[in-house]
Image (cartoon, rainbow, N blue to C red; front, side, top):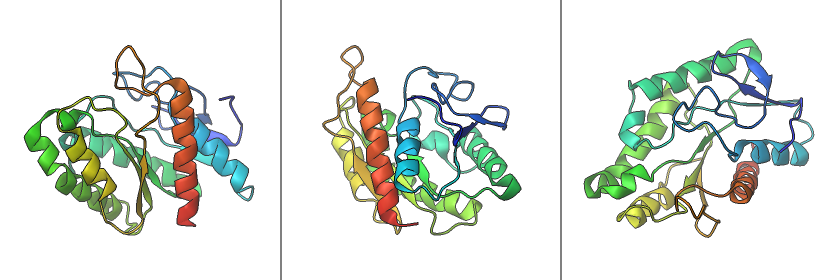
Length: 204
């Protein structure tokens, strides 16, 4: 996706800059390269809602993490909060959280069975710490069966059953042949559009 001066990203130094791929450069030090859904999400939201003057993307992802790595008080959770608070400075508003995670939890039976409880706990904690109890969350149900218990994790994602939490099902999107885990570039773009449509349906 081509850069757009109306689409910004909060970089690793908590400074707004024009967004461009890779969105997670400097933030996800494990796997910063490639195309992710954020740019196509932002482009479609701007197209559908021209009243928006600017969209700020706040990438916080870290590849290959299970849900316990995002528990309240953990390093990744605290970093997420720091970045979210920075985005709120100077009149910013957090309109939604986009959440795509779970492959690592699908490889272990105990983690998979506890995933729904831990996911709900994470969503409630982040809403509380951001003082936004109804903050919309758009999450993604897993696209690839990398783990033996991925159906357990998918079921948790599809049945979270919290107000203002919607799930976009990535099953059927094209996965890279070389790792059978990550989506192809075209699939990432498609997923971004699916996330945007879900966000816009929430009606905020």
